Image (cartoon, rainbow, N blue to C red):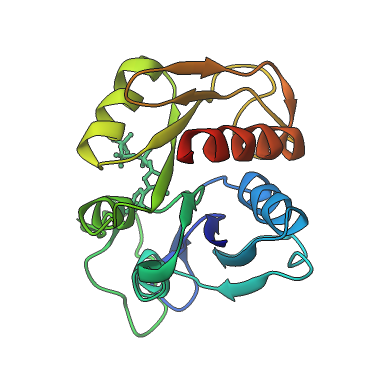
Length: 211
Ligand code: CTP
């Protein structure tokens, strides 16, 4: 089975020195890629910059920006059986990237105009084949179920894995997570566990739903 996993944060350049990013460590996506590999899948991992070692026996494709990730994912998606989008993709990027380092001025107030990035998951939902299973992630701080259900529908997903950043042991930079797997008809809650264990439960559920 061919599986495409995305992981990590994207970086959106402001100038040659600075960028906008988020707290994603990549651990959830890397755990999923490794779990898929251990079960014998042909795995491609498109990953933003992380401090993690590339998983063994996985085709790892490094990217920096949301635009890079869009290109690497959309050009590979057509023959994938399962796509799991665990990456924390920037929703906005600076409208212009300065060629030279931006110098500060005495007492100025800085503002950077931002524009939207392309929504990769939405594109995948719009171009999904019948046989393909598409799984997104949703990180919320409030109204987790309601907001995640909206994303499931809007992006034409088969499943969305939601976590609440405000729960102890869930979210960014931890080795554990507390996730809820949401499909059109069902909600499955997992208790606090390591991201490796979450990955195995997630794959069990995806294989069960694909039958
Ligand atoms: N995602 C994506 N491309 C983007 C932004 C997000 O593919 N430009 C994907 C993420 O990889 C994740 C899912 O969309 O699987 C949810 O991301 P999130 O940013 O939480 O969802 P949004 O619909 O953008 O909602 P909001 O930011 O308003 O919470």
